[in-house]
Amino acid sequence: QVQLVQSGAEVKKPGASVKVSCRASGYTFSSNAMHWVRQTPGQRLEWMGWINIGNGNTRYSQKFQGRVTITRDTSASIVYMDLSSLRSEDTAVYYCARLGTLNGDFFDYWGQGTLVTVSS
Amino acid sequence: DIQMTQSPSTLSASVGDRVTITCRASQSISTWLAWYQQKPGKAPKLLIYKASSLESGVPSRFSGTGSGTEFTLTISNLQPDDFATYYCQHYLNYPLTFGGGTKVEIQ
Image 1 (cartoon, chains in turn red, cyan):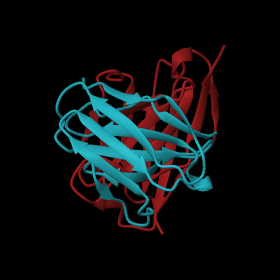
Image 2 (cartoon, rainbow over the protein chains, first blue to last red):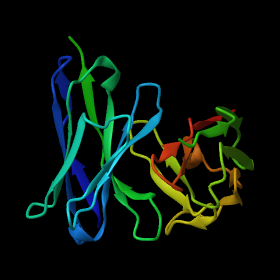
Image 3 (cartoon, helix red, strand yellow):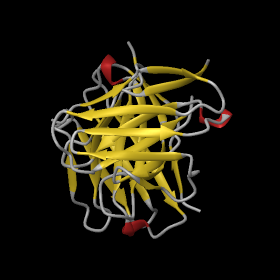
């Protein structure tokens, strides 16, 4: 069965960076792109960007452009999301979400979420 | 960016009720719309894609309609497991955006 397992919770200081991982199993890793979505304490969902697992191409939301980097390790079936210059507003639960196998950018499987807390 | 607006933000209902949640897009998105269910402490779960296509394994009491700018998610015969928060998401273009959510709570 498809599983996306994310790394554990993080506490960071303002200005620091965080790297969250998402390990995929149960399917052919290169077959589906992977997206990152975050959920704020107010429960709002925000799309951050995605990576084409096959060729490594990425696309980011303009909101996070310059601060977010998504990479993948195909040998280990892991996708990483790196967010830099953290501020308190970046406190959120971060999810990896697999692009569905049908046409369109919707998500059929999600990781369990990683809480990132930014606090001095 | 396309804005997605859901209403109501909270809905109180009883087991067995039929409930309808509305999602409006700030511009036409054809049928490029998905619905998700989220329970506390869990990730969202895909219910419907392309406005009306039911994801495999999702009970048939869930249905979606709409096109253009107005969409609805209907849950017929509400079950105890259905008390959760529901989100719509467009995927016409980037950035992908979500509605603010509708919490379905027990009356």
